[in-house]
Image 1 (cartoon, rainbow, N blue to C red):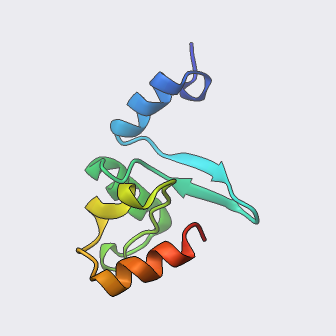
Image 2 (cartoon, rainbow, N blue to C red):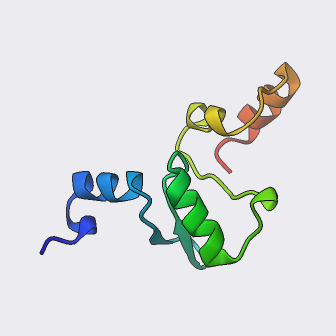
Amino acid sequence: MQRPHDDPRALRTYLRRGGLIAYATQAVFGLGCDPRSARGVRRLLALKRRPAHKGLIVIADRQERLAPFHQPLTPAQQQRAASRWPG
């Protein structure tokens, strides 16, 4: 049996179907899912015992990837975000 993390395409399919992952950060391990997968988000919230109204952190390599997950930014907010990206 092939594990999803052995093949990037299998991992992508696993995440799109609502799969959860653990990933390393600088200090701790994080738990994550594909934020476009409603099933994955529901499962992650349940696992963390986190109310949906508190939201989740979305990690991305480019600002453009975050646009579907927040309200439109004002020009001042865009400038502030750009001045701090990444980090």
